[in-house]
Amino acid sequence: MNPLIPRKIHTPKPYLLRLEWADGFAATITTEELRKACPCAHCKGETIMGRMVVAPALTTFKPGMYEIEGINPVGNYAIQVGWRDGHNTGIYPWELLREVAADKALDDAQLDKLHAREQAEHSTNGAS
Ligand SMILES: [Zn+2]
Image (cartoon, rainbow, N blue to C red):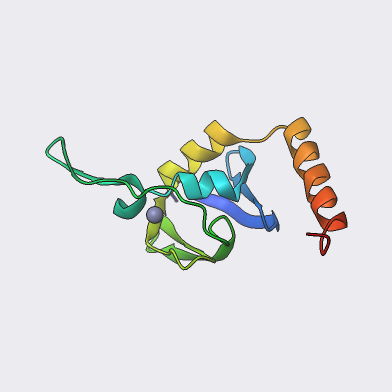
């Protein structure tokens, strides 16, 4: 079995993704970082023979773009992530997931900050 395949992938919060591997490595990242790491040609542009043939899309904020709609396995090498803004062409190979998780893992202080922000947003809901 490929050791890079996460043992567990879940979303403890709509904006958080938790990944756990059999080797004991685990990380929580924001769904925003996952979206930013989207490897599809639309988001990252496409380079053929060192020449950029498709420029990366401009990152204008769309509602739902950081909210995961669904995660589907692709063969046994990747997951495909669908987002609430309708974007679903991103295929994340295990190597990339592990890389993003290691690179963008949130520590407890950052998680606390996000929870505090979430609570603040809830308490001001309807006031805008
Ligand atoms: Zn993409």
